[in-house]
Image (tube, rainbow, N blue to C red):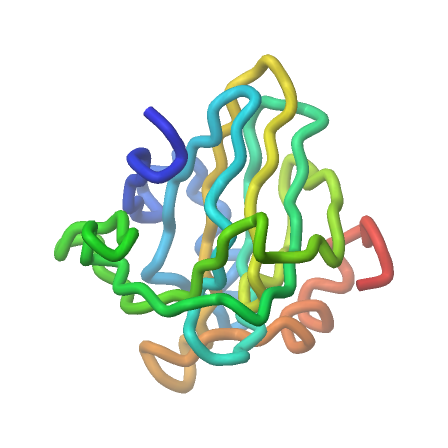
Length: 177
């Protein structure tokens, strides 16, 4: 399978680690949107944003395999909106995995703004256009945990600057961005 066809929705109990949720809860965070992605060797994920606005949402990412693969952040004035449930428009989700609409862009109509090798676990900003890049001979599997404020609203996503501040004691920056 390629990046577009492989997608699984997970629950905390599927992660096999009973410490993640209590740790997030201790900071007032939770999640109801945990996803599992695959980027095959020598392939790239789709250039996309996790939303259609300019919301710098934060996610925790766990990467398995493909050491040397990267995340890329892009800019494009030709990004377009797709429903994640409409396969005809490039959507790759079914109704039981629905999470709305996203922006996508073609790499040839985009500019790479930043690229970094993601560690085993990382905090990333999924608001801007981004994609996975796997130039290695290994399979790249990624689990993402979308952060929400458990004390405000079921849909209140944690923004990048707030997440960086909250997780400051736990992270070593890969760059100054």
